[in-house]
Image (cartoon, rainbow, N blue to C red):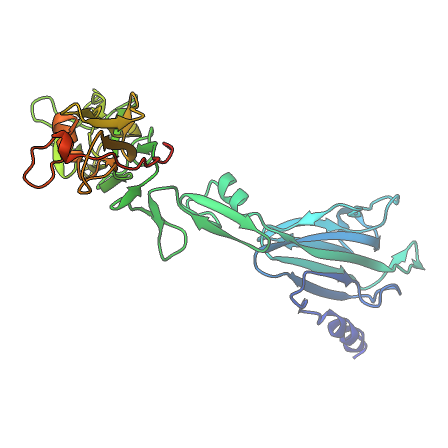
Length: 394
């Protein structure tokens, strides 16, 4: 009977269980009754939880427990991520002690467990001792999921971005390299180059991953469109490497070049194409690959320039071209007048190209128009027209 009475309080105090903390960004954990002495025969596990996307940092500010070798009697045990981070007891400066000091304990996930255990007594050489226990503070620290992914050896790290990972406070997001699209899972990327459009006057275009091997099963379309009146030039760079065959022309992967809808070549192998002067403002590049291969791909630099026009010339001695320039290009202007004319024709400003462009391109000449049935170029058919100042060339 006496043994039963002695066991009842022991059983009562051992019912501690796990105590979760509210999910906050910071807080404190302390021993029972702190700063008064903690009770004997007590055990409780505090589950510290911070919001997802954060990890837990824990630091002890006061620590006073019964010391023992190996911390067998009273102790605080810290664990996180399914691992024990330490077992502590005693106080600073005393023998047989293993206090945590001001060490910072950091979890990898958003949870940390702190277990406090006291045995049935606190005696030292027959003298009852009183220990105040402990006080610890915790706070949420942002998890850099991208750094975890970079350093992880797991096949599926926490972040798991296939291409690019971007960390922010409390979370992360994924993105893809140019030429790829982020998939609905928010992590994986799929090649998408079926409608790439380039409208800048110059720039670089390359196969995906260049100069690393390009992906399989590509159906890419790169379209270059510059302003009307401009012409394109394409220069391929080294290395140029597309899977080929010694006997069959480009049976596996190939790069097709179209100028104004006309196919001017299909390229593969390791010999880069010669410079392409398109004589057009419209070029399309179609790149097809099969399911295998490890070639490095291709890259080109394109430029554009304004179309040059032929030097205007007169067909007769009565036409005058004012301020004749040594070079004309698209959208330049010149003024043509006649020495004498009727009211049917006055000084006229012509653009390059304009209503006279076809004739200029063919002959580079400007006639003095006739009046009625009179012969073009006849002095009686012309009159002196007003001078029209052309805009400055830009």
